[in-house]
Image (cartoon, rainbow over all chains, first blue to last red):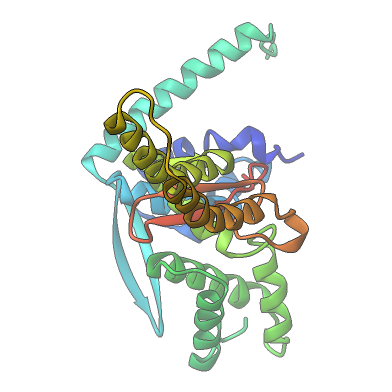
Length: 113
Length: 175
């Protein structure tokens, strides 16, 4: 089962920031594959969602970039800027809080181990 | 593993540009992504053009420039540029077009004082000069989406930035 795009839309920025916080630098394709792998393909980030988000994060100064030349093409690596590191912590805290609220709101009982 | 040559890379780059990816950074990202997909998934003797067209189709819903628009929208939302709905944009245009004429007429009335009668040349010029742009505006506003209007029903209009006015056709269902 993959989650609906609507459900993921508001969390993409947080996912990208957290991945970059855990990994020194990553490029676009690598991010999509890492998410797919970590979620056992339940979350598949589309190119149409990822690249605009990366572009916006760069414009906001939350990530810095470096390029690697691979023959005729360029690979762009993203890493967190100091502001980005703070934003990653903040977004993660916000999402955790939101998930707790949703659990309480929807009266979801945690699964017993 | 398929090996892309320089000519094929140029072809992808040109195609991305023609499909509306104007930002170089976005183009480079997409190029790299597509190249990885081709190199990893296409057989050595595979059909490059067929594989490329199938792959690129998975990147968007209606057209590739959605990615560019989405990126601009996300940046704009954080930069405090003005993002208007279609109705708000037309209302703004309407006000900008008719506003100076109304203001002029009002100023004349105030200046003329009590018992004024607006001379024919003033109100007729208001109608003549404002009417044509207003009709154009009305046609633009009422054009149904099936005739490919300049500003479709689900569009948002971004004011400010490099292109001053930018129409963003939003797909809210996309991730």
